[in-house]
Each structure stands twice: as C-alpha cells, then as structure tokens.
Length: 415
Ligand SMILES: *Cc1c(COP(=O)(O)O)cnc(C)c1O
Image (cartoon, rainbow, N blue to C red):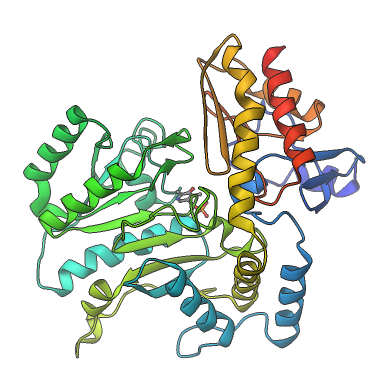
C-alpha cells in the first residue's frame, strides 16, 4: 500500500459511502486509454469511463497537449469583465453543434451547478417579463439532475435524496414521463392544474441515467415540446449524461429543440471539470434591459476556466477528426450481442442497449459490495447501483476490450 493511502485515508470523506462499513477504495496510480492502473500493479478495463466523462479514453494525447499549451499561457483568469479565446471559441462551437436557436452559453464548473443555473434562468425569465409566481418546475420520476439543493428537488423523489432532505428542498411537481396514454393523461392533468405556477419542464432526453438507466423514445420528447408550447413553458433538456455521443448522436435531443440545455460530464473528454447551460435567444432576450437587476444573477468563481475550455475544444476536435459517433454505434452493437447471453440468466429481468449504453437490470442485487468486488477480481471496473449493472465505456474502446467487459458481466452474473 502506498504511504499516502495510510496517511490520508483517515482524513478523507468519500461520496455516497458508508465510511464505517465500506471496504477501503482502490488506490489508482495512473490511467491510460481504457485502463485504470492500480497502485499494486493490477490493471482494470474501465467499463464506465469515470462516471461517463472519458469519452475518448483517458490521457488522450491531443487533449493533454491542448491543456499543456493552455497551462503555459494562462491556467485561469476571472470571467467577470474579462474573456478569453478558449471560452469564446468553445461557446461558438457548442452553439453550432446544438439545434439552431440554442445560442447563448453560460459556463460553470459542474453538472449540478449547470442545472441550478438552468432553473434560475427559467425562473428569472418569467420575473423579467413581469410574471410573478412562476417558481415551480414539472419534472419526472426516474430523473436525476444532481446533488445540489435545486437539482435534488427536481430529481426522482424516491430514488434521490428527497426523503432525507425533505425539509430543505423546495417542492416541485414530479410525474411519470408521458410514455403511454394513461401516463400522458396524468401528465396533461398536472399541467392543466398547475401550468400557471410553472416556469418550465425539465427532463433528461432519451435516457434517465443515474435514476436507473431508463430509456424512452423521441415521441415522449415531442409530447413534452408540444405541451411546453401549448402553455408557453420553457423546456429544459438535461444532456449532462446523454451529450457528446453517448446515445449514438452528438446530442439526444435530435430534432426536438429545448429552450435550455445543460451539458457537462463528457464536455472536456473527462479531463477537467466544466459545465455549460445553453439558452435560446428567446430566453436570452428576456434578460436584455436598461435595468441591471434583469441581468442573470449567477457567476461561479472558476467560470469558463481556460484549461477546461482548452480540453473541451480539443475534445470537440476529436469528434470532428475521428469517427466517434460511428464508433459509439458500433460499440452499442457489440454491447447488444455481448450482453445478450445475460437474458437467460437467473435474476435478470431486462437487458437493454441504446447508443453506447448497455444495461442489465436484475430483480434485486442482494450484496452490492460483493458484486463490485467480483468485477474487480474479473479485471474490470464496473459499478452496479440499485438493481442495475451497466456499461458506458469510452466511445472509441477497442473491440477486444469491450469484449472483456461484456464477458466479465456475463461470467460474474452467471456465477
Ligand atoms: C451527473 C449528472 C448531473 C450532475 O452533474 P455533477 O457534475 O455530478 O454535478 C446532472 N444531471 C445529469 C443528467 C447527470 O447525469
């Protein structure tokens, strides 16, 4: 064991971890491509790309070079009253990639904060137009939008931390996605009853990630767009998980344009923390005024960090110069065939794949800690949660490595 582990472990607090009972985490020495090199010399094939961020694999030389160049010029400068090329180039490129109309980029440093900014944008949009009382959002069961207070309050109440923090969280309206006639009727009823107090609707398009890797199709998004239009509400797509190729397209929204979109996770190719909240001109225009109080009232200290923006620009270069989306689709086909044998296994209730996301849903996982350990022993880094075992590898993962991942899932779940 490295000395830093002994000295530091008594002082660290880990995420979502019962520190009394959970076995100590694995010390990592370095990463490379799709591999995590542990301090004890073992090497794991990474099945989840560090919470879905490392879409080109780790330490991509092009991203590293871009960050090194930027580090020499300027690691950081405040973004109030000052701007810089990496951020403005990135803003223009994101606006070009997103559906037309989404044209104003507000940077922050994590996905949760990008969601907070989206909620504040939508709320202040109405205030600036002189409509008070529109402070509620319509959100969906199975949804996950982050761990900060506002983001938690629009996440699934049962899955998320709602129960623990009920006294702290503002109340919003949370219903099932309108994926069939009965749910559509309930959705419409909630809208009809509460539209006057709503600022907007927030959803993860096509895939609800941390809430259970649940898929829906574009017809649900079209229904949400139509409903938002009917009541004049803002539609927010949280693409923090789905953005940058994960669903096989650059963005999951397809031909359904939201009014606001949030991006993070794979934005810098997993290199540095960065997030963006991108708004339409309609939203942006509501903030234009002679009145300084109508300005958007948000500004993270490390907003638009130049190193992170340089990494994001280099990541977008890779999407342009390499066939990343085709690779994502091919990887999805491999996940589909590789995970198919799980369908017959005891305890498996569903196997589903969309884009480069492969999911094996179990009836129940009795011992999550033991299951995680089995995957490490099998030489792979896979982090089941709830009743879900899932794979979201680097989009350019080699065929052999993806094979190792699916074989490990089949083997561990068979035993
Ligand atoms: C991860 C995630 C977030 C939160 O992002 P953080 O960077 O962890 O704050 C929000 N929304 C979705 C859809 C996510 O997957």
